[in-house]
Amino acid sequence: MTIITKFEKKCSVCGRTSLQPILSSTNSWGYPDIDLRPPEMRRSTMNTWLVECPHCGYVASNIENKLEVPKDLLKTGAYLTCEGKNFKSPLSERFYKHYLISKAEKYHGSEFFSLLHCAWTCDDNDDELAVEIRKLALKSLYKIDPQEEDEKNALKLIEADLLRRSLQFDEVIRKFKDVILEDKTQNDIITFQIELSMNKDSACHTVEEVVEK
Ligand SMILES: [Zn+2]
Image (cartoon, rainbow, N blue to C red; front, side, top):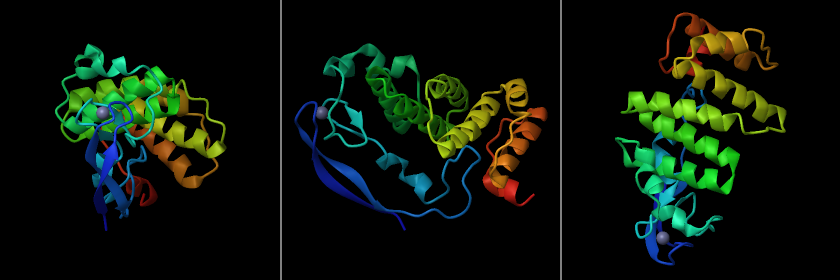
């Protein structure tokens, strides 16, 4: 089960304290989506992955961690308005703000995952922005230089899904038709992505559909 506890945290930017949720435990039941979005109950813990200081608007996985760029960033119009993107959920805004901070800090991995997670929150209520955020996430993904084989393969799977779900079906087919991964499930996911792209299917699908084929 999911246990979320609140702790008082002191913001490293403004020095003020606030109560912030900390995830003590959770579990997953079932299969992830084919872009690796976890199933419930972990899926419902996204509001604890990043926290926001209610006083100065700093967003971080832990607001006690130092901000690596000048704090004026948090007062810019781009940060305050999420670059003019009209997100329907405060959670989407939080992931987007973390993307802006990570981009300024030049942490490409964090920049990319903030956008991927932002896209997941958009999937729940914001279809049009979900496509736009996925296109942006692809740009961040291409900045990452993965060293480990596992990481490389995970990013390939996510890339295929980002392309398909941002309606770039021909790109999925072109880039992945000759890709062969060692892991059978991962390979089946790529084949599935190509089939879906041939059918111009941009919907969300789960790994369960691949393993039960
Ligand atoms: Zn603060």
